[in-house]
Image (tube, rainbow, N blue to C red; front, side, top):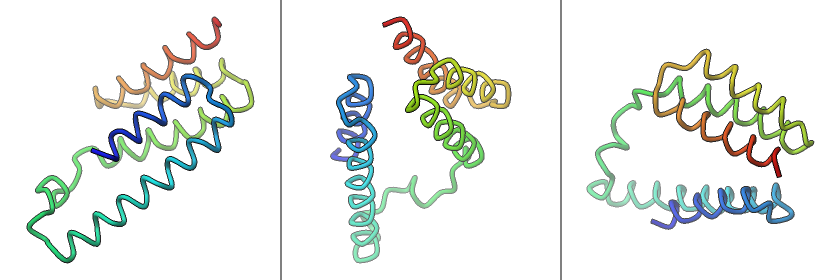
Length: 119
């Protein structure tokens, strides 16, 4: 629950341009990493508490890696004000991706960037 709330908070900080955006999101990321480390320690001590989905390999491993790489590059472009190039990065990603879920994420980022460019 805490991880979901923090993830949502990071998105809201980004969308609201809560300065310093990059630093604020980085701090949320560090907190999320700490939560995941605590979860791992709990699962070592109490394996029965580990959700089944964490034991199964992700069917979207390659899509996750690819989206992470493209999002990182697009965020770097956005950070320096190159919104059109960030959109182009996501559009290039869409040409490579088959996963509907991952495509939706990229399309959402394109809509967000286009809206931000209009403001």
